[in-house]
Length: 234
Ligand code: MN
Image 1 (tube, rainbow, N blue to C red):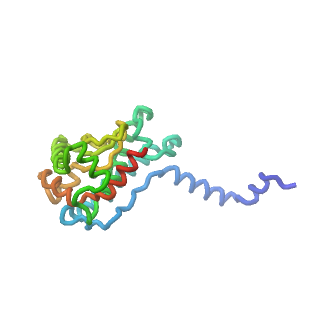
Image 2: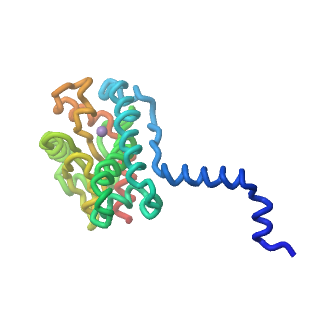
Image 3: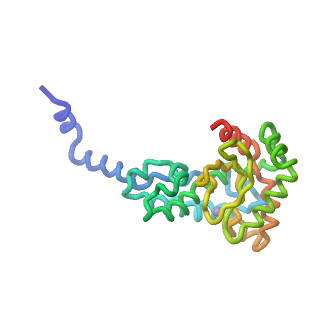
């Protein structure tokens, strides 16, 4: 009688077995991939130029993905998690890779969100439930804008300004330094502006205020509103 083991021996030749093992190794080695932009590089012109978008995506974001893969390589317990799971509890990470995952896992989740919340057909004001929550929390859309811009301008050096949803479902505006994500503090980011110089220097040089002002023209409020509803229903 043929056992299951006999069958496996017959089916998996040494060559096929090696190929399979190699494929599994490759998948394990690179669990994170650079997501494509949901629009062409020039879609956000003239507010954010194509060259900046291209370098930002294929240079900066790609490097965070590469470095995150390197950080989890040979650590199956980490490689099986999502980037969001990895950065949600930094203290739980092995000390040797904690900083690398904080910076590059953060960089990966931050940029993945950033591309989604912009659109060439963006701008205007939020609608629906999100609009009501913004009015209730900040007084009005323009008061929200003032506080969000002030927060973006107040980031010293590299970092982000965020609109987040906290554990109680409340909106808040907060900065993070470097590639830190509000996810690590238990909050869900639904909108963020990257104020690293790499996000604006080619077009705006040192004029961060002009870049932040232009950013409002590309905010994809419908996507932000979806993320808001997902966050409050968590
Ligand atoms: Mn960036």
